[in-house]
Amino acid sequence: MLRSSPLRTRRPELVPATPGMLTAYLHDRATLGRLFRADIPGAWPPALLDDDARREVLRMAEDGADPHFTCWYWILEEPATGRRTLIGSGGTAPVPGDPCTAAIGYSVLEEYQGRGYATEAVAALVPVIFVFPGIARICACTYPGMPASIRVLEKTGFACAGTKDGGEGFEEGTLRYLLER
Image (cartoon, rainbow, N blue to C red; front, side):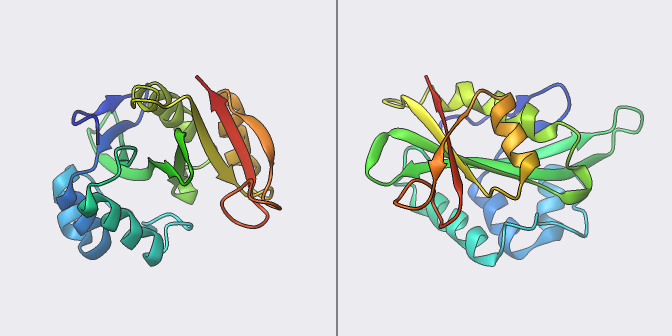
């Protein structure tokens, strides 16, 4: 991971994951909450971050071989109370066979969707990703039935580049979006 200090957006703070955080992310909610000094909602993790996806994130972090791998947790602090809550996460990974492209993914708990948090987080991560050596573009994939995710990508400058019917998206039926440097 290239950055070790948090990123501030207008609202959520993006905290770069450490190996300890990623281990707690998979196995120990109480420790994760202590590491963030934040509440971990009962709905955590977001819907698309199933156990397999979380194990893969931990594997990539422990492996350390991928220079394009990053993971960030999104913490929302309520100004009036100082209460901190884990609301989402996002990160980057390589695109197999395309060393000039980094993939970005993100997910927000359902109760925090539709409030612009993902747009703020993705907009903050884009310049960090373009610091990666050799990266000329960022790609993201989403499902056609996820209009909020599509809006996040469009608001942050990504353009639709097709669907997965011949290798465009990561999974069958996904839309691929690209942002060029």
